[in-house]
Length: 182
Image 1 (cartoon, rainbow, N blue to C red):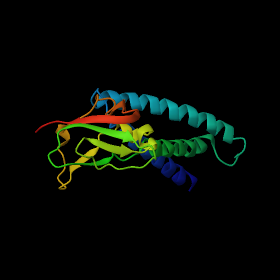
Image 2: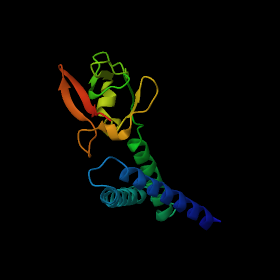
Image 3: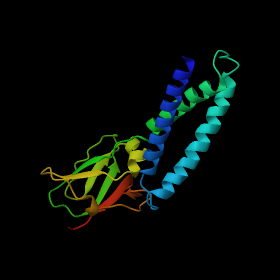
């Protein structure tokens, strides 16, 4: 019976690890899919393995009832879930005036308010946490006021590793990108 639970635990841990690799490989990158995938595999594999082994070794004298490998699977699963939560952040949903073309500046609002409805000058407002979080690196979902989605091909970022350009706009921190003509 214990073997059955261990197999299920290892299966869960493996599935969490594989889905984490896929999430990390799909983060914006200038190098396509395979380079980030291999790099994610190496970094996550080594990081989760080393930290999981160290924590399992510390826990084993305390929890003598469980084997090292069972503790390792549990600790690795917890670490992987933590990384899933850390990496997850949905892309911003931005609404621009109909047929808008030009530069968009998402300025950190002095009162920490968020307004992702862009005005005719191309300015919208974000909170400090959006500016600092990982959602500040993902390509946003951009819609016209009439509800039509702007083609992702028209949304131009700063570079392919980090989507937004971080700059100073009228004395405030801002994220910047462009919408080009059809």
